[in-house]
Length: 301
Image 1 (cartoon, rainbow, N blue to C red):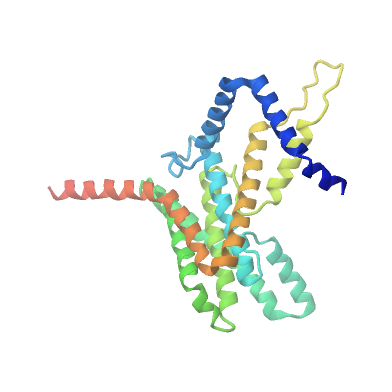
Image 2: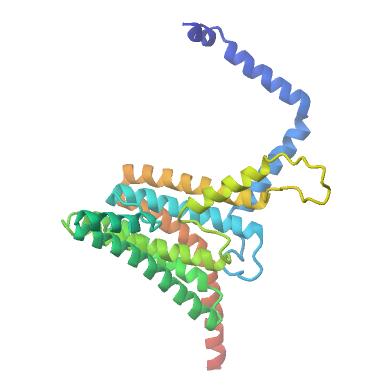
């Protein structure tokens, strides 16, 4: 009753008005404008629009890694959460699959243990295939050797979105095929981002991300108090903290959108994530096609 009287009396509106007046009084329109511009600038830096996002391997910087990290973590979260609603199995990592193999072998469920083996092997084959593509592209001086792997992953995701509902009607085939397909895609996904970022970014599983967040937060809040001047103070790696926080938030956001869209749209929700990957990969691929076309025309002339 007290809470109802509080809201009914209009105090909430008055407090909000008072807060706005205080903020304007202390900050002023110019400061507010600068704050908005700063937020816009940070948001723009995070947008995956940089031309070197999927081509610059040796000279990676923190801005490129952040753009790549949140983009691919967003997709991994969406595929993982949407895939779980489709087949009741998480496919972006193999930790649970390895544990499942052990459990089912002990319980005597050979078929379920074999399904876990299929997940592990599919994830490994995805990483193998993706690295093979990248190695081939690097040896033949393709600028799009990372983008090509991402484009193939997008194509497989598109296939899943278009024929998933049809496969769902085939009893006994849908679950194992879908689990292995999603695991294969996530293997490609993790291999590509690991290679391009020199193993600084992982986007398909959050165990290491949360561990590193805990470590850096502990260092951030550690109170350095020592009379020994020779002892170096404990400092957090703030760039690492921002990167991993961004990855975790993007994975959660992708998972939420993936689960929500699968619930209301079904398998076709995968087309959204597929289109997002195509958007990331299309520029380097078109660049290589244009260069190869020009070389072909020069060789004929």
